[in-house]
Image 1 (cartoon, rainbow, N blue to C red):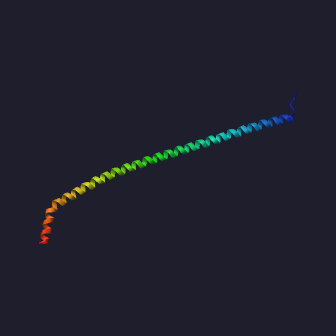
Image 2: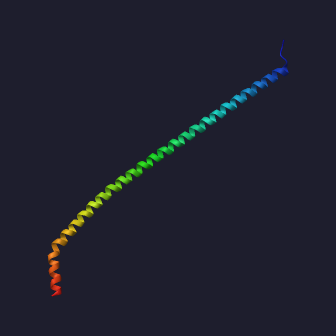
Image 3: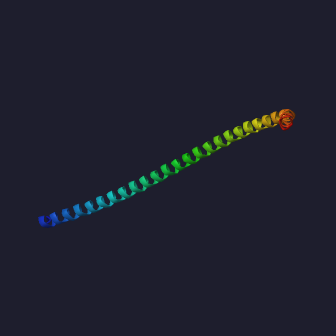
Amino acid sequence: MADNPIDLVRQAETEAQEKIRQAEQQAARMVDDAHGEAVRLANDAEDAARKAAAASVAAAHKTSAEKLEISAALLGGEMDQLVDRAHANQAAAVKMILDALA
């Protein structure tokens, strides 16, 4: 017995609707997966940028500390030279003051 053409059309329509529903679900899953992957990649990029910035700040801090140590050593050396010169010239300065007061 041959199937009724109307029943065949209805069956084809039902099958088509089921395939459409499955395709929509698959598309929705693909969109969700793509969104999740995009979020993960964005978070990874943000983490990498933060780590790079932290490394850059640490390197700049180290360089600053090294330059500060060098400057302090140079300044200390200059201060020692000034003190030595002051001590060396102290007798002459006292004599000049005494001569000026006399």
